[in-house]
Image 1 (cartoon, rainbow, N blue to C red):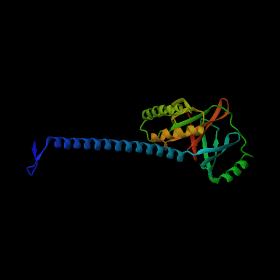
Image 2 (spheres, rainbow, N blue to C red; image 1 turned 180 degrees about the vertical axis):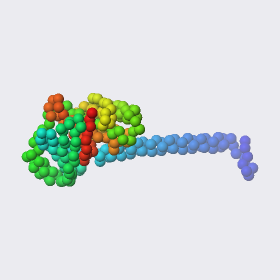
Image 3 (cartoon, rainbow, N blue to C red; image 1 turned 180 degrees about the horizontal axis):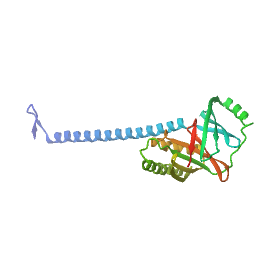
Image 4 (cartoon, rainbow, N blue to C red; image 1 turned 90 degrees about the vertical axis):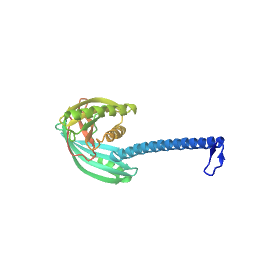
Length: 247
């Protein structure tokens, strides 16, 4: 038996009940805390994934159409990207392919148009942009630029790490697979055979963003002149100007 501060006796059964309540209250609180932390963690992960998807969508808009006009050594390109369902950016640029392995791409202009305006513009462009590339397998050329890496070994390690993740992501989503990779004067080169350039580009950008490389890459697609002759058109960044050294 026990005595309270006023000298009143308290039964052992009451003490046991109080101890039981204390233990149960502690367990319930702990379980609630764990549940709260678990839900918070899941919510943060979900928000992070959603943020990455939104960021990818902002960086690479869906291609509405691409038209080409060809001279002896220059390819003129009109490429429309969908910003919203009713808004499009029309990019105009040309590519000097006199040296296909080091083609020079020069961005000319971008014009924002409505759906009605882009349809009208496309019809106008189709009267002169009449060249069509040879139908061949679709290849994406991802090149990590060497700036920001202390030496070739660090760049090589990053390429091997990223190309594994890119290849796995494309294969898991049935969008393509790894084809080749090396180091060259232009940077760390990775080639992927793809089934859909638009969807594959979105997937590639998601992986690159996870590795903080979205601002340090060039992505080109292979444009075939015939079965064994091609050049690469840089499609990311969309307003790229400069050489694309694929050696």
